Length: 186
Image (cartoon, rainbow, N blue to C red):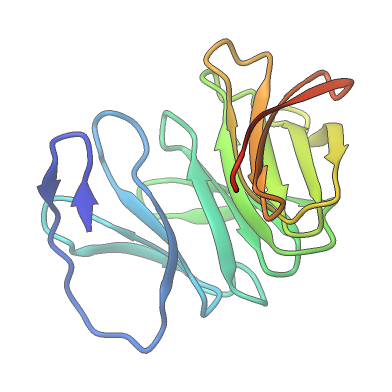
């Protein structure tokens, strides 16, 4: 595992027959590194030592396929193979399920939050990207396309999202109305 901020290796300890699907190290402080596993668990580790901090069992029935954390590290947002998005409150000694969001019909492939953590976007293999209100826990907008979305991110100004999928196109969307292809791989 690599700490990208300082470009040095992190310690990884332990053996497992399960595989890590996604890893996120929120914030500049790197207070913990959370990981999404195909056995349905979310595991968090101390970045400097690799020691386990906590484990959330049965986070998703069909494996945890995507993960993100808020900038203050007080919430984790996970996506599963079942298409559900789950919000977890993270305390020093407790991890509690806060909300379950159900809009996707396929596995969630990517999750991003905006800078103030009031909005998030999820991409799914069902051909949808959903923009969520993370204060009221409701869908704000859905984008549907004939692709299996693999990744999504916010544009620098956060009024547009950039998506990429199996159609090999990178698309910028603003308000769901206008889209334009940035790049098509050949």
